[in-house]
Length: 60
Image (cartoon, rainbow, N blue to C red):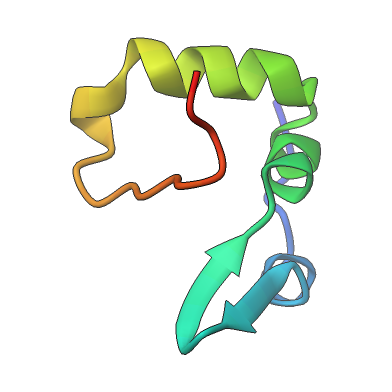
């Protein structure tokens, strides 16, 4: 069983950019203990689970 990630660890990975709270893909992947590429692949395959996701940096 995996332990829960402390709130402080998550909060320090959230950045305020242009008045929006964002989390870098590498930081989110690190919290899930997976490679960034695997996280991106999972998100692409399940876009219906992320209705508010805005990702202007990734165009592929």
